[in-house]
Image 1 (cartoon, rainbow, N blue to C red):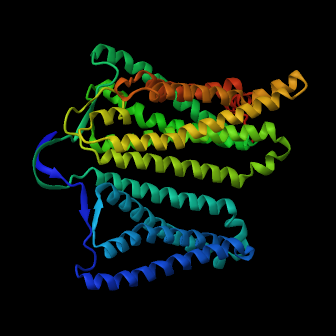
Image 2 (cartoon, one colour; image 1 turned 90 degrees about the vertical axis):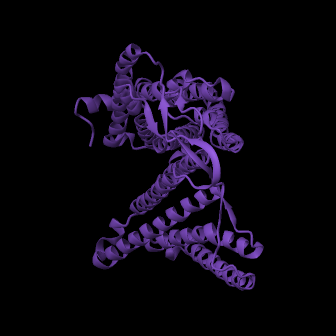
Image 3 (cartoon, rainbow, N blue to C red; image 1 turned 180 degrees about the vertical axis):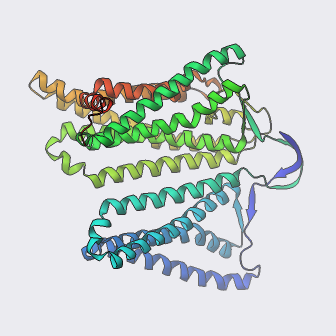
Amino acid sequence: MGFQNQTTVSEFLLLGLTQDPEVQRYLFGLFLAMYLITLVGNLLIILAIVTDVHLHTPMYFFLANLSFTDVFFVSNTVPKMLVNLYTQKKTIPYTGCLIQLYFLVSLVALDNLLLAVMAYDRFVAICRPLHYTMIMSPRLCILLLVACWALSILYGLTHTILMATLTFYMGFQNQTTVSEFLLLGLTQDPEHEKFLFGPFLAMYLVTMAGNLLIILAIVSDVCLHTPMYFFLANLSFTDVCFVSNTIPKMLVNLYTQKKTIPYTGCLIQLYFLVSLVALDNLLLAVMAYDRFVAICRPLHYTMIMSSRLCILFLVACWALSILYGLTHTILMATLTFCGPREISHIFCEMYVLLRLACSDTRVNQAVLIITGSLLFIIPFLLMLISYVQIVKAILRIPSASGKYKAFSTCASHLAVVSLFYGTLFGVYLQPLKTYSMKATVMYAVVTPMLNPFIYSLMNKDMKGSLKKLLRGKTAS
């Protein structure tokens, strides 16, 4: 960290097209009319495509998404410009500027990718007309759309986080800024660190192998191509990404005893940590709903849990978790770190960083409580309601064997939910000042490692598929 005789900028001035008040009034009417025409035009296109079954084709599917993107694009920039023209107050907060930048960059990228996909659609329609319906299947269309959103979100996130790491100065003030942090880890004793390296490396390898085997078994065994195992494969993929975001860096620190992490690297690690924990939570909630439908509505299960609904659930889980992580990462990037840079933890965790910040963290904590309630407490309550209904349905089954069979289909999920929320509540249901890393090590390292064992030992179908996979006799 170094010393800067400067003061950081908390807001910007959007000067716009002109400083003349008379011209600004004329421009207000012109841009308001253009904005309303843009909204009405694109919304009419979306409505026409949704309501007319003749337009339910790949070309119009992507056109509707392009119009939806354009609606968001203009709504990200034009309303603020209209407010500035009308009130002649042209300030925008630093956080607001970062959020506007994120959506601007992401939506431009999304527009570009959708246009490329639409060009491919036209290529297939004209150059491969006989194979058009087979190539441009609903599944491919949804996969292309998900890929477009994922790439554009990643593109916007990358540039927004990099922008947030920059410092904008004005005025003069003695201040120290932190350019890197020290991850102190579990111990400062070199001998203990050498000892800890082995167990954590073993746990990481076991976690990777276990979760990758679960994914491979589900993908390769057609008997497991059901909604429950579809979400389980995504849960295992999330756990692989989760441990790969934190443990390799911790292992490097233990082995080399060099514990520094750049400010940018800390923010990136924080983003993936927060997003993947939220994604884990949402996937568990969707899996609870799947078990509720399977046990309480067995005759309607295949109709309710259709492939389309499963993909929509997955897209919603990813979108909400990405938005959750983005929100907290951008808010964290607005804080100033000018004091201690030692993080008494194994990775960059939100609570610890909030304690190190020298600027006001009340907004961060308020948003953390609100979003945490929406993305964690509400899904947890929905899971409780689902399992209350499941228990009632199981108790109504007359035979003991029927009760056992029904309960065995959700026992592994219930065990994973208990483990996940038990460790998570152990971390976050405590005051900020008394925060400890012990429960965090449980949910960050131990829980992802135990999940594959729980599903393989408590699930007969998964156990059988893994045995066939390891013997090289998996059904094709």
